[in-house]
Image 1 (cartoon, helix red, strand yellow):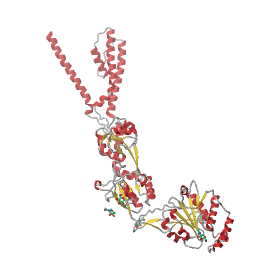
Image 2 (cartoon, rainbow, N blue to C red):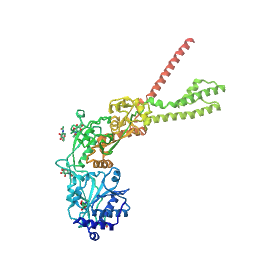
Image 3 (cartoon, rainbow, N blue to C red):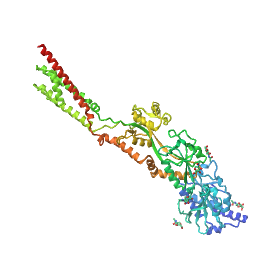
Image 4 (cartoon, rainbow, N blue to C red):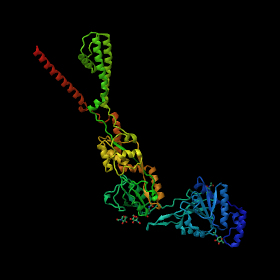
Length: 623
Ligand SMILES: *[C@@H]1O[C@H](CO)[C@@H](O)[C@H](O)[C@H]1NC(C)=O
Ligand SMILES: *[C@@H]1O[C@H](CO)[C@@H](O)[C@H](O)[C@H]1NC(C)=O
Ligand SMILES: *[C@@H]1O[C@H](CO)[C@@H](O)[C@H](O)[C@H]1NC(C)=O
Ligand SMILES: *[C@@H]1O[C@H](CO)[C@@H](O)[C@H](O)[C@H]1NC(C)=O
Ligand SMILES: *[C@@H]1O[C@H](CO)[C@@H](O)[C@H](O)[C@H]1NC(C)=O
């Protein structure tokens, strides 16, 4: 970096000033007396650097090949920046291709010693991303604020701040120019220069405002044109089948519309709502409506949209998250005697013991030379097992021991049966539940999915599973089939709440969801790319999201009662599975099995009775 001593400059200054015959000369005396004092301005710039440039503070100084005062300023600034270890670059042109990136991170400073010169400056070359500080040190007493008003149009959208040196107070006033929306024409116009900040003699600034966001936020009740697609619960439009793109809509309800009303209120705008067509189940295909937002016919679009339109448009930022997950029919086993029998399926174990005991008893008895009947042994053994009769009297030690062991086993058997009865009557097992997506896909159940939209995930396992799905025509149809045929389907969270609440029986859920999400979708609104409202729109949306307002409105749109009902049905389904707070009464139907067994027993004994009578008659006849 080229640097000259101040002394050299002063010398040149005097020579050139005299040569120019300039009346607004700055003499060395003036500087020494402090009349022309750049000290506070350069201090100011240091302060601003600290506020605006965080990690890589670099200051670009625009060298306009100007006159002497500019050079004095430049050198003072360079000295000061050097003292503070802040890198500097001297640039000749505002933006050039090769160092474009540099300008985005640095602060560019330009100096003017006369208001009139500002009018000649080419503001068109300034990039919107640049932060540009223009120092005006007009000693002639001109009111530079008026000059700023004249150039308002060219600077109103840029991050350009003017620092005007006030020679009377020694303070430096910061001005900038804001655009605004005209009340009558609804066009963007320019406000008068606004005094936004002051930099004091001691180099401190009054507030933090250096480069405020320029976008207008008061539309003065001008129309804010929105396009609304439909998707529950984001937006619902009656008779939407009759509407074409850009048709006016008056009757509309839903979550997105509520949010847009809040945003319109924030911008002091009037909402003008138009219909846009986007297929609800497959949003990727219908892009026609984006033409309206590109050519300015619409300012924003909403209605459950996603970030899938590339950078043709700007996005509002995420304001709601929803899961897409597997939903399945949750059937809980009814309490019936068949179930009881299936619960008692381990009883065979005791039967084996019983038969073994009987055989061993017979063997032992015949070994001891006692008269023994297998039938009698079986009858007594069964009686003891069910606690109805006693065992045959043991006559030897071996038999006593055999009986003792058998009785212990009988006690176990009756405990086992009682426990099964108890749990059958008081505890209902939970339904089959799936936690992971792989568990769902391995369950062997049939998935009901819409053919046209089912391949929205490219995961190989999923696509293989989806290949074998059964067809259905809409969200609701798929859900119904899931319920009817013990199947599975994929649902968006909002639709799931509705479905779970609707299908609940006795306030117990009949459908459950897999714990894992198949996919999480993020909803965003679209904003016209060149809309002046983009930055503020995004800021408002972020605040609404972070404050939980969008979340609350989302639940409200689904219906607070629906969500509450779904949640209670869901938890009832799980809790009553164990504690039996509901639906645990015992009915005769559940006991029918015992009566059937009893009737079976009666029939057998009747048969035996009949057979005995017949056989006796035969014997009597023979006698
Ligand atoms: C510098 O001074 C010269 C001669 O006085 C004048 O023609 C020129 O416009 C001045 N340049 C600037 C940038 O003020
Ligand atoms: C700088 O000057 C201003 C106004 O004169 C005063 O309010 C402020 O406290 C001063 N700051 C410091 C650090 O001296
Ligand atoms: C909204 O715009 C109207 C019409 O220009 C204006 O009268 C009103 O003051 C504005 N409201 C706010 C809060 O700025
Ligand atoms: C739609 O509404 C806007 C604003 O209310 C109005 O200017 C426009 O004429 C309407 N268009 C149609 C086709 O009705
Ligand atoms: C914007 O594009 C749509 C669709 O191409 C067209 O119908 C409409 O007239 C256009 N509007 C303007 C203002 O150009």
